Image (cartoon, rainbow over all chains, first blue to last red; front, side, top):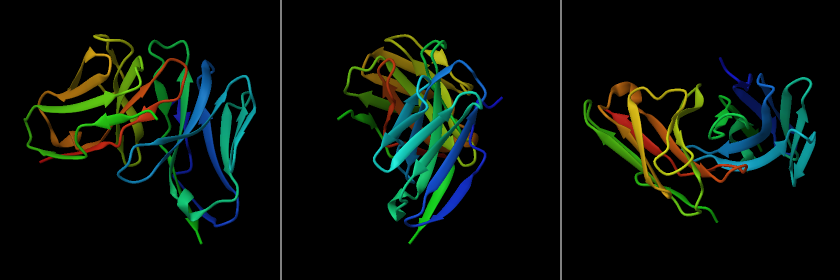
Length: 114
Length: 111
């Protein structure tokens, strides 16, 4: 059963507008959430994270929001740029699980057109 | 900067061959991971290791084994490669409580 869900396989946005990528999770023991960006034929790169004790974290154009009661997080990219076109993965950590492996969603492909 | 290096970018192997994928990290991280990425399936955890000689199965360990003899090196072994193991393989490492850093990936094709 999928513990981290990204229900939108793809998202298309115009340059300069806001991109909102969504992620839902089912495990209430998750205490740390991350977003990764992946270009084709490259490994994922870390983008931004948020601890479960916070509800917002900002880093430049990227902001992650966490709604624990809804078990939902979102990544906002403002303004979107063509170079942001990539696959975005949401990931979560279960602190109580041995080895604390990150559990990933299936990803959302973002396309930003100029 | 953390560096995670995978030994090959592209590999083509025959069905039934034994395949070794090597991964080295240079930041003394305790935890190392092997994932595979397939279209529509995201990143799925194969195996991970939280210490030298320690290993834990992930979600899809069947057909794979791992070896961690030294802290910086984590190897993924396909005992007898099959066509359904054609995939992008990604190694990652992290210290406890922090984000994971990924290698550049190995695109394995089994023919």
